[in-house]
Image (cartoon, rainbow, N blue to C red; front, side, top):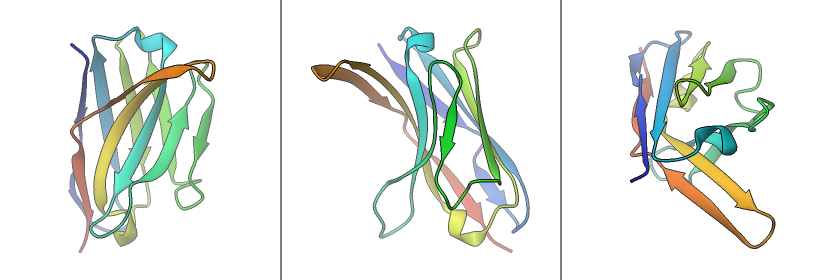
Length: 120
């Protein structure tokens, strides 16, 4: 059974920091690209950050320079360090694990989400 369990969300003041974690089980973690997505009320889910199997990262323009993304394959865990948080970062953050097999098919899994609220 595949599980992605997010943790680390909460309430933080503007300018503060949070670190989200996503622990995976039931998959060959090192073979999966991992991502963080977020969904604010009334908005579509959007990509926040990606990390490849090789450790390369990419970020949404809105978070570039403020967020960092890392993975620990020994612990089957990824971490999203969020600094200089803004009210517009408020959303439910979801962890995603993705493994593509060419253009034929893919394995795609989601966590249950963790709430991040940035407010004074």
